[in-house]
Length: 288
Image 1: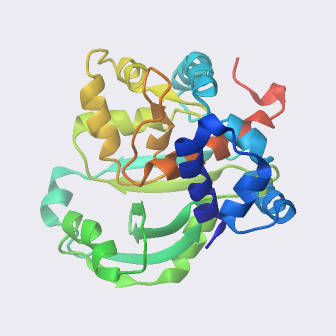
Image 2 (image 1 turned 120 degrees about the vertical axis):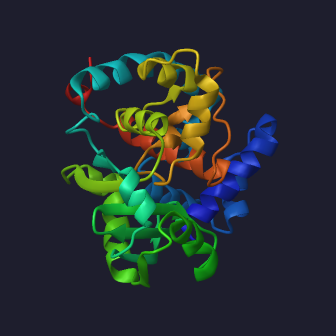
């Protein structure tokens, strides 16, 4: 069992037993570790203690983040960037496939696909001539199921398996909280196929800073479609690039985290991880 699987198990347990206020010892037993080892492992993974991390997952915290997030999100949109210069931020240049490229189905392209471990479990990614074109969380190394979405999107491409470039990509995408304190934001080229509406939603998502959440309504307003929350939700759920396009930062207006196409526990773990990191940021690095 890796660190993320232990964290996901803890999150599920807290969902079912939050009224009982489980203590550190109980959570350590559930993780199959001593209290000392569990605390040390968890702090290494999240950058903060289990208590502080779990505080970031509460409804009260989420509601407060929504209230504060609107201002930060608007500032990022106005600046035309994805909170550049902030700790653990990813600078993603998102290109869209033209109708001709979609019709060609990737003919003449070579796309490398592979598996790599991330802080949130096993990933499968695809890298083509125009950049990252696929990134998803998977449960195992079943090549047939992993390659299916990529082969469906680009049926005429030459898809080859090569874990090495994917491992390098994933290590840059998922910088650990400690590493993020010293490294500059990573830059990525991403290439996707989608409708004009989906692209507007995905580009707006790139302006949501790490450690901040927005609602579907706020996102709809940001793209000039304030009455289209449901359509925005559908576009968010169709995101082809997990984490790179941060659809995990969108929650309901009530503060409830909601579902996630790559499992609800994973979404909550990512939000807690980012919020914990943001709480450690110097005030001078925050958006006014």
